[in-house]
Image 1 (cartoon, one colour):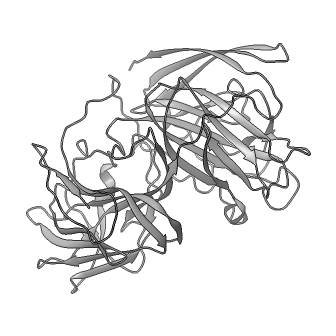
Image 2 (cartoon, rainbow, N blue to C red):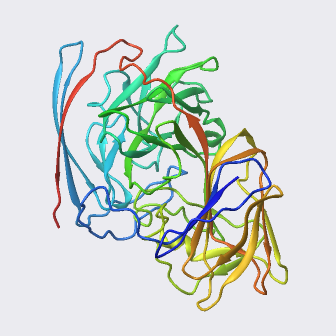
Image 3 (cartoon, rainbow, N blue to C red):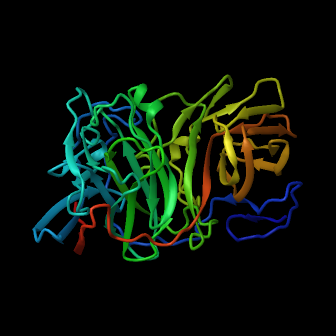
Length: 446
C-alpha cells in the first residue's frame, strides 16, 4: 500500500510499500498548511488548579482574563413552558459548549472554563445532586432518565453547532449511587444516529473514579444530537454528568474522511511521564493526555518543540519527556495497555529528539509489521500516522534503531473508526418536543 510524506517547506509526496494490507501511513513534518477556521483573539490563562479529571477531586477556580461567548436560548416544550436563558461561558483558545448536566447555574471550573447548565438543551430527565464530599463541581450534579418498562428508550441533547465543523465530543459519567443499586447501569451512547460505544462505568466507579468517553464527529447540520439509550443490559435509570462539544481546527485528524466515519478514542498517552493528566490550557482543545512510563528508561527534553505546524496540534509539553532504551538499539512497548477488538484504527505517534544537534534513525513496527521504515527523528519533531490500520488483541510497538543513538518515542494517540449511521430523531423517550432558537453572539475582549 502507499504512504505519503509531507515535509517543510514544500509538500513532497513519496511512495512506500508496507508488508501488511492497510491504508496509507503518513509521516508529517511541522508545516503551516492550514489556516485557522475562526479569527479568534488570543488570551493567556494561568495553569489550572487540578488537571486531572479521571477521579472526581475538588479544585479551586481561577479568574483570568477571558473571551466571552454568550448564548441566548429560547426553549418551548410540549408542556408549553418557556425559558429565556442568557448564559456566559469563558473560553481561551477553545470554542465550544460545555454542559454541566443537572446544574441550575453556570459554573467556573479549573482552567477558567465556564460550564453551562444543560436544561436549555434537553426536555427530559431529572436534575440530581450528589452529596459525596470532595467532588468536582462538574461531577457533583447529573441528569438521570427514567426508563420504566421501556428499556431501550433514548434521550437526546440537541446542541447547536457550526455545520461542516469537526467536533471533539466528550461525555463524563459518575454514578454516585443515584439509583440505589451498588453498580451503575450499562447503556449506549449515540451521536447523530451513529452508535458510539457502550457506557460501562462499573470498574471506574468501584475505584472511585469518573469515566470519560471522547470522540470526533463532523457536524452534518446546524444541530448535533448526543444521546444515551438503554440496551439489553440496562437495569436502572440512565444518567450523565457532562457533555462537551469543542470545535477542532481543520487540520486536526484530517486524514479521516468524516463524511463517512467518526473516531472514538481508545488511548492518548504522554510517554515517559508520571504526573497529572495533560489537558487545557496546555492542550487548546482540552484533550486528555494520560501519563505512561512502564518499565522503561525516561529521557528528558532540554529544548522546546514548536507544535504550531503539526496537523494534530499536540500540546508542546508532550515532547518534554520520552521513552528510550539504554545500551540497546531496540525499544518495545505494549500500547495501548488493553486488548483491542478486531477492527480498523487511526494511529498517530509523536517523536522528537531530546538533544539539540542530534538526530536518530530507526524503524517502527506494529505487531511485527512495518509501520514506517528509516524514520529520521530530529529535535524539531514529527508525527507518523495512519488513517486505517487493522489491529486485534494486544498491540506491540517496536522501535529498532539503525543509528548509534537508541530509539525514542514521546506520545501516541489511537482511535477506533466508527461508521456513520442515520441522523437520529430529535424526539427522546418521553416524546417531548424540543425546539431551540439559538442566537450566538461571540464577543472577544481582554
